Amino acid sequence: MLAAKIMVVEDDLDLRGVLLRGLHEEGFETAGAQTGKELLERFEHEAPDLLIVDIGLPDADGRDVCQALRAQGIQTPVLFLTARDALTDRVTGFAAGGDDYVTKPFAFAELVARLHALLRRAGTDVTVSSGSLRLDPVAHAAFVGDAKVALTPTEFRLLAKLVSSTAETVRRRDLVRTAWPHGAYVRDNTLDAYVARLRRKLAPFPEAPKIGTVHGVGYVLE
Image (cartoon, rainbow, N blue to C red; front, side, top):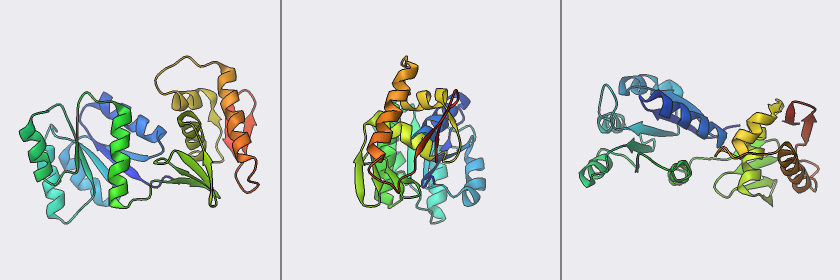
């Protein structure tokens, strides 16, 4: 299951799409909104664990939206995303109840690290699990019961993609996009080699789910 849900409130459709896809590949459940009004209307039903809010929304200042949430007693962590980098903008963002602040343009890896830090401080479970197998994105490790299985970042991304699609076949191209998110050229046998490494690491644990091959299509966590 995907334990942490992040809502991205951003009116730039391209940027919002990139963030939603990237966060989903990192193992998060995601939702998107375009305006402050939409966020406030959907918040109760969507129940996100964390909000990424653009300050320059088309209908409101993101800081005002954050203050409106705080006035209702809602303490969901808020990370402001904005092109503004003046000290006064950062100070007013924190004063409005924001928890962190990332300036555009930004490195996606840094954004993800900040999200994990906010979720840890909020006490939110950010693990992803399938049966006895549990993935911890903070430790970049897998656990089968109490036993820890060390993974490289690429192995972790591959396994997280399979876990988030348990019992569903994940196509090879989708696994490649997830495991190598920066568009590197990857040979077919490279993906197969990484899957083989994951199988070897999980093999000592009979209770762990197995990675099955769907020939000519991809892989499935069984």
